[in-house]
Picture (cartoon, rainbow over the protein chains, first blue to last red):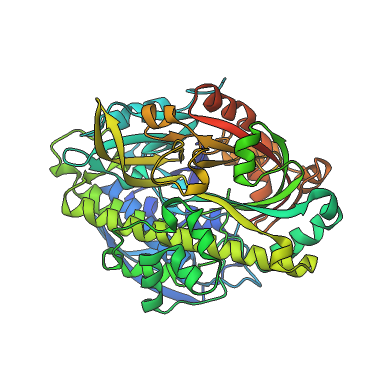
Length: 140
Length: 446
C-alpha cells in the first residue's frame, strides 16, 4: 500500500479525517481503524473477542458514516475497543463484517480522545486515480 | 475583532439562511467559528407553521451549558486551600472519556429524569427549590416524551448522571475580579474577591445519541424535501411534522437530562467544598446564581414586524439573554435582566453579563457563549507539544487537573479567542451588559 490508511485535516473545533483505501471495502476498514487509532493505543488492544454486524446505507459515503456511527456507539455505550474490522460481505451499499478487540480496561487502555459523533458535514467519498478517498468530520 | 470569517463559518451562516421558514435573518455571534451544519455561535428563528427544526442547529451536546455558584468565601480566606479543593474535586467528580456516575438508573427512573429535569434531582435531595428558580426554564423544558428516545440513547444515559465529560467541559474555581455594574452585581449576589464555581457540561452520551438518531432519520428524508439543502448536516424537518415534533420531544428529554446532570454536579461540588474546608452548608453559602444552556432549540415569543409571535429559536453556541421585565425571569432578576454566563479559556476566567432589550428585539434574545476556538485541536496539540502546560497554568495562578493526557494541550489558552474582546463586542453592540469579570484559580477537566 503506497498511501497512508488515514490522515487528519484541519477543522477549527472538530476533527477532520481523510481515509484512504484501494477499494470501498478497504476504505471502510481503514475508517474503523482511524477511529480507534485516534481514540486509543491500538497496540494495547487484544483481539480477544469478536462482534459481527451488518450496516447499510444509500451510497458509499452514507455507508461509511453509518459504519463509523455503529462502531462508535459500541465504543461509547458498551466500551468495546476494536483492534481491526474484517469484511465478510460487501455490496452496494451494505457491509457485513467482524470486529475483533476487547472491552475497555482502565488498567491497560488509555483513552486519548473522546469522539462524540461522526457528522455529515463535508462528507465525501470519491474514487481517485490510485484508489478511494473519504472525508469525514467528527465532533470531539 | 480580527479573525472572524477566516474559516468556513460565514458560508455556514449563509447556508442556514436557506432553510425554509427562517424569520428575519441568520445570525452569528462574535465568538463564531466553523462548526458542522450551523456555525458555532449561530442563532436562527423559524416560523412554527412554515419553518423547520434541525438537530444540526442544536448540536450533539444538547443543552450543553454553564452554571455559576456564588459562595460566602473570600479568596483571601481560602487562597492556600485551592490546591486541596482542586484535588478533592478531581477525586470526587467523575471526569474524562466514558466516565460513569455513582448511580445506575433503572429505566423507570431514567424516564422520570427525562420528564422532570433538575426537579427530579432536587426531589432526590440533590439541591433545593431555590436552585430551580435560578435555572433557565426552571431546569425543565415541557414537551419531553421518553417514548421518542431510542433504546440506545436510554442505555447511554443510565450511568452518566453527575459526570463532567471531556474536551472543553470543566469545573472551575473562580474569584470575582472586577465589577462593572454594581447594582446588577449586588442583585446577582456578586462582590469583589468572592469565590465562585463555574460548571460547563451537557447531556453527555444521551444527548449525542438523540442527535445522531434523528440526524440519520432526517438525512434519509432529504431526497423527498421540496427545497435545496446546502449541507446534509442541516437535515431538518418541518416543525409541525411528525419527525419535527418527535425530535423536539426527544431533544427536550436530553435538555432535561443535562439540567439534571449539572444539578448533580453542583450538589457534588457543594459537598466536596464543605468536607474539604470543614464548613457547614450555611457557612459555605454555595448558591446558584444562574444556569444557562447554549445548545438548544426552544419555542419562545418575540415581536416580529410589530406582532407577538411564537418562534422556534435555535441557539448553537449562543446564550439566551432576556431583558429586564421578561416574564420568564424570576423576581430577583426582573430589574436586572437575565444573568448570562460566558466562560473563557481555562487560564483566563469568565464573565457574568445581563440580558438586554436590544438583544430581545434584534437577536432573538441571544448573545455569545464563550471565547470560541481559533486553533484546531491538532494545531493546539502541535504548538504545545513538549510544553508543561500544567506548570504554565500554575505560573499564571491557575491550578489545573485533567483526566485526559491530551486535554490540557488541546485546551491551551491561545487556542481560543480573547474572551475580553468577544465580550466587549456584545457589550458595545448592546446584546448584553457587562456585570462582572471572574478570574480562574483552579480547574478540573475531563
